[in-house]
Amino acid sequence: MSVITPLIIVVIAALIQAFLQLTPGTFSLFYHYALGKNSTKVADDFSLSFILGVEVFLTTIWLIIYSLIFFIFCNQPSFCSEVFLWITASIFVAEAFAFFFFYFRKGRSSSALFIPRQIARNINARAEKIKTRSDAFTLGFATGSLELIFTLPLYIISIVELMRISAFPRIIAIIFYIIIATLPLFSIRNLYRTGHNLAEITRSRIRAKTFLRLSISLGFLLLAFIIITSGAFHHG
Image 1 (cartoon, one colour):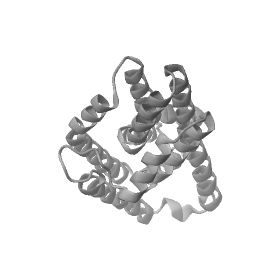
Image 2 (cartoon, helix red, strand yellow):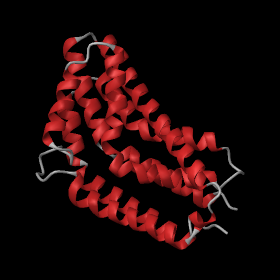
Image 3 (cartoon, helix red, strand yellow):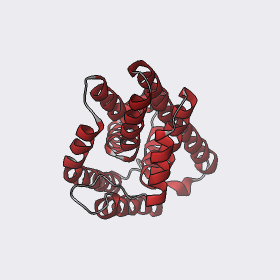
């Protein structure tokens, strides 16, 4: 079986997750508060702990979902049926429309996202109160769970595809996925380290809203198209 289609799916999934905005937005707030209360060196150390927390969350969710899929479906040929193919494709179509219409809250000058305002206020309060590396790590780890409604299908399709190939080291693909998904955090960290501030970063995120709304929605639709046309769950 060719490894091209599975790897394309993994790359698209990783890029979609990299463009999601909840974790980068939280990281921007956290770094801003850390700089206001600590030295640049301490804030920088805290930022690495936050990123490590995100990476550990990604690794943990990958391992959990991989184990569940293997345990439930490894001896179930019906998992390869067209029913699952169409269900999965339909989920990505639904994700595309949900993202386009609901991910960003209304208001051209707002960077507010889909999460309830009370949760957003709690995130802001936690980001402001970070005092240790473990606090930063915990915030980074917890933030990833808030976007599972959009990321869970990405994990599942990526893992299923990787489980179907043997000619390419799976661990390399997983590491690649995690690196791509966390690149925006390193980019924001570099912006702060080079003298930029929260207002500038927020303005750039607001300017990118239209691009992100279109590109991520199209990314979800592209995954659905690939699944249907290539038979992502039924390679032969």
